Image (cartoon, rainbow, N blue to C red; front, top):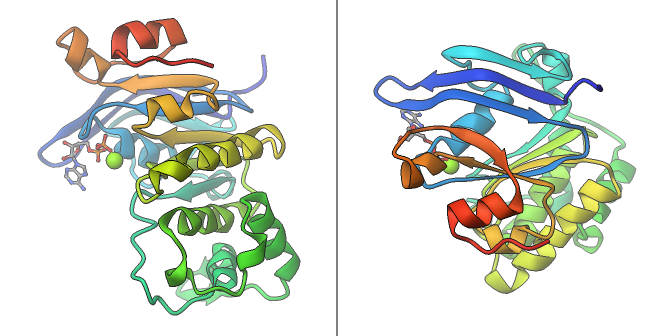
Length: 246
Ligand code: ADP
Ligand code: MG
């Protein structure tokens, strides 16, 4: 069998006061589109940060492409759009092109190396999220959904194999949520990008995803904490109480 893109092996994580994750196992294969769901505080954002190597697990191992996550080169192959990425002030003085280009800024010691001559890459990244006509717009003038697409383009410009998104539709107008997920489906199927996202819109995302993992589902159903599995649609429907259709 091929090496999984991401493998979490018995991961636990403890903040000073809070046990956020206990004994999490998860395997993500190339081409997957995984939705992670679960109630607030169940550790979804913490789990993403562990996959990204931003937090070091208290216990357990994270392998990316079969190698430890803290190897710099492996981390570079993941694009990340964080939970707060769309909390831009309106009037933020940057064009869409500048925001996307900033995805290629490299930190070398204390220095930032800014990329040059990347108009073509910027254009391609914007095209892949349906924003090719907005390069010269001010980011602060765009809607929440459009801004989120720009942040995805910024994550995509370095050509990652995996895109990780934390509640990407929070600032997206509800009438645009479906087209937002269609755009992610396109990235997954046509651009072959593996997608891992945290979301609460179980219904809207259900047509796009290949797998669902539910963090802390057992708090609702069995009285245990922080158990996680990947589930079939039927299980999800029965356990989580949402109708999920492909
Ligand atoms: P979710 O994304 O599912 O809402 P989080 O991963 O943000 O959950 O948080 C999981 C638990 O860890 C919560 O109890 C939260 O209060 C706690 N937590 C999150 N971030 C921190 C932090 N930086 N310091 C201390 N506790 C935290
Ligand atoms: Mg969160």
